[in-house]
Amino acid sequence: MKSLLLSLTAALWAVCVPPAFAAGLDAAGDTLSGTRPAGIDSVGAQIERDVESRLRDSLSPEMLQNFGLFIYVSKAAAGPWAQRMLVYQKVGEDLLLLYDWPVSTGRETVEASPSGTQLPTNTPAGYYEFDPKRFYTAYRSTQWDEDMPFAMFFNWIDHGSSTGLAIHGTSPEGESLLGMRASAGCVRLSKDNARTLFAIVRDNFKGMAPKFAFDKHSGTLMNNGLLAHDPEGNLVRDAGYSVLIFVDDFGGQNLEAQAY
Image (cartoon, rainbow, N blue to C red; front, side, top):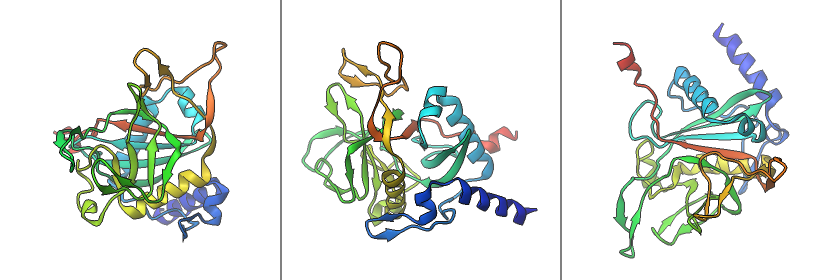
């Protein structure tokens, strides 16, 4: 029965992934496998089903309809889902789990940067898109003097300023901290996983994407899930990536506690 299930899963993967996946992806000179990725560093099938359920419950029908890739990040400090990223591709009405990776989100403190400036290290919960103008295979943070390989910055304006929040790879030292809050606010992955995600997004999901609503009074691009519509009620779109990131401050239910 188990071998049959694995065969059916492999068949679904081969049929449903974008053509670029089947052909192999080329990112920064590296070719990714055309088979189902070995990136399911799983915390358990039940937890993965629970995360998908929470993701679906947290998204409006308009969001589910108009994005093709969904990146769920738990910024929680504790819980079975805490400090994990699960990546889902929409296939018809289904969400196909592509990857389940450990991450590090912000330390949620105010700290002195290398220059001595007091800065917050928060990862704000909410809904985000990528900024198509800020994709870098190599980048270095000027505020924190840290390398940010395969950085994909969020398209988020907060009170008139473009923020420096991004998903990116980390250093070998940072990789030892994955699975706990350890960043200055960005979502850190291992460098290899960041390279993989960068290639998938860049090579498969570029196109017209919904825009989030903008609050003119505060000069803030909404991150509460409210999408922009024109006066006739039509969804406003712009060139970008049809990828939705959901940063959630929830670590899942403690399964041991539920048993008692």
